[in-house]
Amino acid sequence: MSTDSDSGWLAGFKTDYQTLFVEEWSPFVGAMLLVLVIIGLMLSGLVWGVFGGVKFWGDWFNNLIGLGPMLGLPQQSEGFLMHRMSLMNIMLVVGALSAALLSRQFSPNRPPPLEYLWAALGGSMLGIGAALAGGCTTGGFFNPVLHSSPAGWAMWAGLLAGAAIGLKLLLWTLDHIEWGMQAPPALDIPETVTRRYPYVGLAIVVGVLIWATQWYGSADEKLAARAVIVVAGFAIGFIMHRSRLCFARAFREPFMTAEGDMTKAVILALAIGIPIAALLFEKKVLDPYLAIPPAFWIGSLVGGLIFGIGMVFAGGCASGSLWRMGEGHLKLWVTMFFFSWMGSIASAVFKKLNLTAIDETNVETYEMTRVGFQAYLPEMWGSWGWTLALGGTLLLLWYALVRYNESTEKFTLL
Image: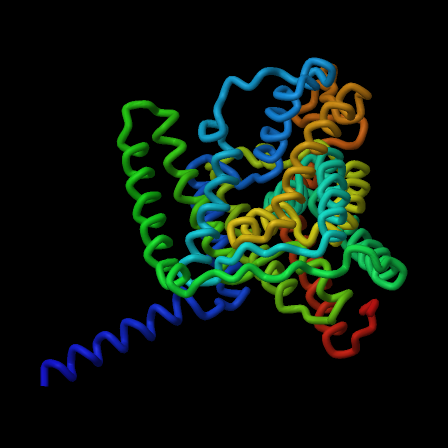
């Protein structure tokens, strides 16, 4: 009798494990969990960012090869694990790696040779676009929209146009380029190795929790604050991998296959997050300008256009590239290298040209550059009512267009 009970308990445990860690989560579940983590960061006085950490890596590399002084880059005083956004990005990769191991989906993926060229081109365009827009799909689009800034919507328009143009260009290359299209044989990983994946994934989870706990209990206030980032970054990577949540797909898929679930998941995340963020700003929990780039509208729109083209060739945006790196996609490692390197160079060059340099003579509360300023609708309009009404209307319009396209395929380019 007890043997049957024990076997039934084990079977139930395996079923639950399969549901949580092996079967793919709905992108809608992923979107809601992502918003919870972001709101948790905001309550801690922090914001989710990606490009700042990516550019930090590029600055480090440029200083390493001697380009730093020429570009006017300062020597970094913080290490990779102390820089806030660098740490968050690293933990995003680790979170995705853990999720991939627990689901036994980790597998080094070697693309065809041509894909490495697309990764270099796409990653470079991601860096240029993010430098102009003041952020990637996270810092230039998602966060500003969440923070009721029209800069996010300007980048949204650029990303849509860029995704359409990028897909057209990519389709042309598929029709006219034959070199480098043959993928190398997949790596044959012995089952004795893959069988141990879940144990390694679990060990990573436990290790991260111990690490975060030690830092959180430290007398060093900086380490204690970084402990929150360790947990939040890990959770974001884990959630994005399990739900396959990807901003690049949200903009690209409607033009490719008319599939709109990823887009609707992003819309849901914003629909939940905008009013909660508004309440936090109204209660002075967080300064909204922390996540609003001085790029409205020229920098946001043009940067979004360049970024949108780049993410089609690169195979992902910033956060999407990071969690796919954790899954084992070698192309995205190349993408991220060129993204960080070119992002650092482009940011420095644009500042030298006074395009994105902050205007120190501006006496307003917001920052201003030649490509835009920090636009915050509640202050511009003096009303949260009109601000929330506009945000809700634009989300409804985006949803209606995606839903219409799912039924008619009017906007598909294939």
